Image (cartoon, rainbow, N blue to C red; front, side, top):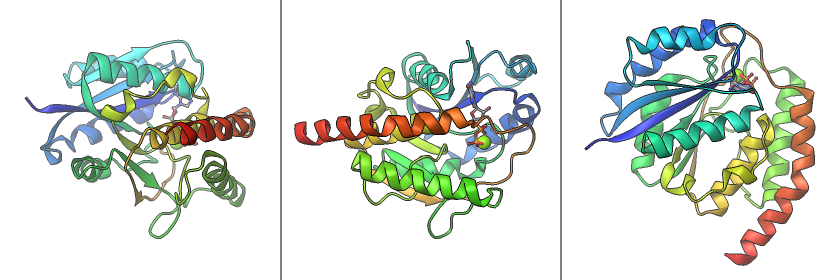
Length: 248
Ligand SMILES: Nc1nc2c(ncn2[C@@H]2O[C@H](COP(=O)(O)OP(=O)(O)O)[C@@H](O)[C@H]2O)c(=O)[nH]1
Ligand SMILES: [Mg+2]
């Protein structure tokens, strides 16, 4: 039987984006012959009716799933989504992706094929040769670069170019070994703590350059609080990393 690959899409007020993005993702299914492609929307009771749009689309796409819950941050939404994808859908691969077209869905087949070559963590990298962030102002670009530098130093995961990217493909064989409840719960720090956890558990990593494009509609949900939580999470990342390296 063909294994499942599931795109986990967290959404908060993305009604106009999901109606266009979901068909574009499923258009890639034929280019991923190794897996059966599923999409899981993890919506946090978006007031703009995102989940109603998804329910309508479910009539057209049998492999489209919807989880609704209370808004508690991006990390909590991803944790719920990963649990469902691994335990209910029995997915062998999960993709992390934004629901706003900043991540190009035509790269999904490349990510999936790299996983077939043994890369348990494929990162869409916005920095380094070939990557770009045309929509970022100087402040946001600097913040992301400094964040990556800090994660490499504090988490002991040297050599990576983009530790906070939200476009990734993860093998669930390694994800199942991670205790997601111990990770930070919000945007930036969830992405970086998940990355470190996967690498500490032995993930084989490859970075693929991506263009992190413009949001099609709506606004970024990244807040000052997310940035603050990221800084506060660094000492814990350092301590946990040191413990893991000593143990393993
Ligand atoms: N379910 C859920 N989704 C969220 C939350 N915060 C952000 N998102 C979604 O996560 C994705 C990334 O957020 P985005 O605002 O695009 O961050 P940016 O790309 O870093 O500016 C988007 O699809 C958002 O709708 C949240 O608290 N809950
Ligand atoms: Mg985005």
